[in-house]
Structure formats: structure tokens, C-alpha cells
Length: 131
Image 1 (cartoon, rainbow, N blue to C red):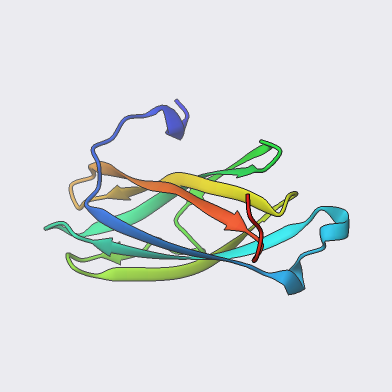
Image 2 (image 1 turned 135 degrees about the vertical axis):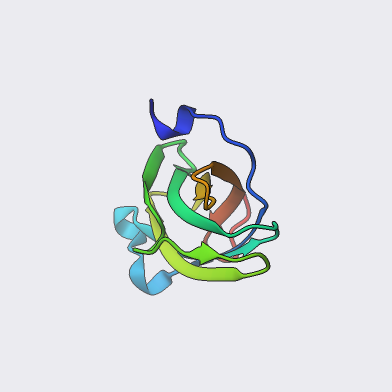
């Protein structure tokens, strides 16, 4: 069964996102807009959790969708003790100057139980663009 179709309890993980446009890595003439995003994951629960998988849905302003899934994030599967945070930066490219990302992470506790941490939609937008 695909990972996106499984149901898991919600993980006690707070997710903070900051996204920015990377003009020096974008080529608007060829419809390539590059964005960086920084994610801060904080374990607000009472037990250690390991980030095992990620799932992203990236949608541009033409409603073209791309899904990305895989193990861990940026080559890591961080273990977060209660109260600990993990910060990482990654990126995405879309074909329009405006879009959004959303998804979830899967965390595992020390008993092998998986938890889902939903990532609320966030905007990808070049500066000074109203939409």
C-alpha cells in the first residue's frame, strides 16, 4: 500500500517553515523558479521519535503537481528526544513564480510505532508578487 494511503496517529511534532526565493538559481525565461525552505522540527511529546520518511506535494500556479517521497530528510533520519529540535534546509523548483508545498513526515518511536506529522501548506512566491 502506498505510504500516502496509510493512517497513523498524529506525532507531537511542531513544524515551523520559512521559504525564500533564490533568484540566482532561477531562470524565469525558461520557467524555472527555485526556492529554499528551512524546516524546524520540535518534539513536543514525552518520548524520543526518529524521522523515518517524508512526503511532499508541490503544486505550481498552473496546478501542476509533483510528489516527492523518500527516507529521512537531507540524507538523515534524526532522532529527536523530548524537547529537542532539528533544523534543515532544502529546496524545490517549480515552473511558475507562485506555488505551494504541503505534506507530512513519518516518525517512529522506540517500540516501532509510526506517527504522522502533517506539514501545513506553505507558499512559494517570488518577492513583491501579489496573487
